[in-house]
Length: 97
Image: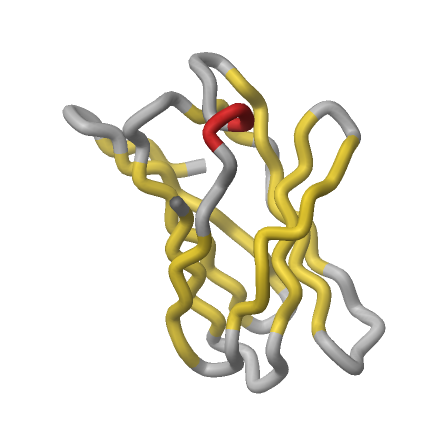
């Protein structure tokens, strides 16, 4: 699962990217927090994921950096002022990228 903190006014379509393929996760409402599910097959040890945030009715996509995701990690995606960034909170560690 990924918690999306959208600090923009526009609603965003949120996609996950793995190996160049993107999969739509859902919509994050403007100025709010939305929890979206990531399919289990995408969250395997050592998978590199990236997120793409596309404003509905807008033209400025935002893409996060790649990060390695492990089963059990809690992901937080923040959309703020034209930037799309993420953090991974593991069971026993905190990692920011």
